[in-house]
Amino acid sequence: MKHKNKQSKIGVLIDRLNVGGVEKIAIEEVKALRAMGQDAVLVVLRRKAVVPNAFPDLLKGVPIVYLDDRLPRLLRFSLPFPVFNFFSTFHITYPFLLPFVVKKSEYDYFIVHGTYTCFSAISLKKIRKIPFSAFIWDPVSYILERVYSKNFLSPVMWVLKKIAYVLDSFVIRNMDKVLVGGDAHNEFIRQIDPKKKIATVYPSVHPLKKLLKKKDYVLIVTAWKRGKHPEYLLDIVKEVPGIRIKMVGKWVDPEYRKEFTQLLKENKLTKRIEIIGEVSEDELTKYYAEAQILLQTNDDRGFGMPAMEAAGRGTTFIIPRGQGVCSLFADGEDGYYTKEKDTKTICSHLNRLNKDKNLSRSLGINAWKKVKNNYSWEQHGRGLLQVINEHS
Image 1 (cartoon, one colour):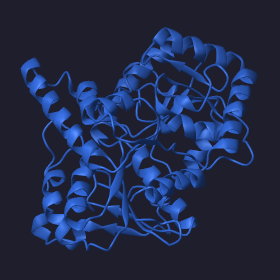
Image 2: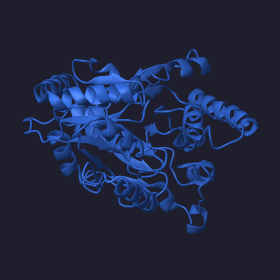
Image 3: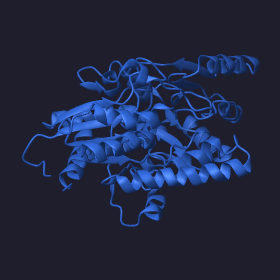
């Protein structure tokens, strides 16, 4: 199948529209592909999301298909699996149901995000003959070890690791090409299938054309939930005199926000650590652009969108080493890389940049120029089209 000389019907497939970097990337992919003349649409397995009404501003003008709208209401039923944050029964049931509501010729190709989403993509490939390539941001094996290793007894964890490896192998071997945002998991992918082709397609941002005046705060951006460890910020502010942190992002569990707010009150840190919460994309851009520094404390091994977004707004960063985004910038020239939760090194960089505003400004400008001159969503879209065009 060749698509170079005709418009392709491309589905960018995700499981749900939640608040996160993966969903934002998927939305931007649809926009980029449509701007290049392709018939691209955002395809969502399940309408009901963990976080309702995610990205209302980004989704304006983006065509969306919710596949489970085509199912009888009774068959849309789903329950989350205990302990696991985002794994639900629909990830298992929809692969058996959705092929009956998707036509064979409805899509030429799927670009898929998420390992669990791949279960449905594999079913659609086998039954409806729709090929796909998928971004492996973080394999199940990696997430299980990193996030859930303390939740299970050793014998149970051993069994779960075996199951996770089987699932990762099943997914990787059944896709046409593995898409990645960096080389963090390439060794693992080659261990599963040495012959599998891997394509690196870096996410991007919309860089500012003109930089804004900086304000005196450190920004940290994520979808806040248990496992993101916001409590660690208390260790940071105790070691960096005068630092002020703004926490931006949706709190998935409102009760967790109440707990953390109470913790700040008890430690008399409400003036030094400010919870902003969910903001629009325009507001987020302004927060990035006016921050002195972007701090990321949790390792987002698959890529690490906050640093890319900060760089596109002229803001330097301190982030965990080894993420996909680290391949795009230079340590010490655009920002700083540290080991995850290396408090001594993180605080050393924060103190230096907090005292030397010219240095932080200079690093941010360096990072901004790299994004502006080398990375764009159009470039990302071209990378995806190349993958699709190479399919035969």
